[in-house]
Image (cartoon, rainbow, N blue to C red; front, side, top):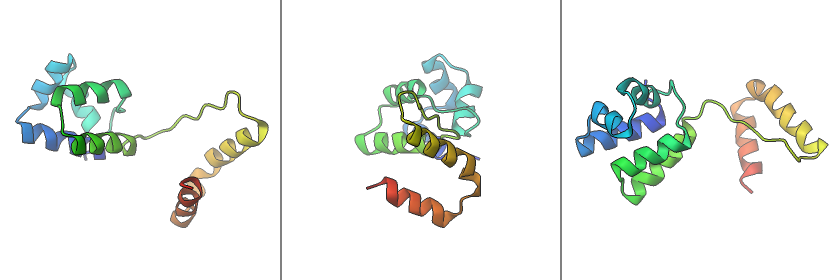
Length: 116
């Protein structure tokens, strides 16, 4: 199954008639590495994202889609708590500990709160 990023990259590659192997070789990577990124088995690092954008040269709209889908394809998030006060640290840790117990309504409420 393709990740959101993988779907966008694969569509762009097909539209440009660039094979997985050709893209991989142009980036100095293996086909299996690029395939793993497309399927979400490997993370989309900022470095590989920039390399793919520079190689495929998408239009502005497609570049925005690639960047958005790279974020959506993340399977983990790291929060740097260095320099944060105790309240901020406690909030981040509570969130991490309770994340799996939240339901869709909770997620929507959090999104609304954080999008202010």
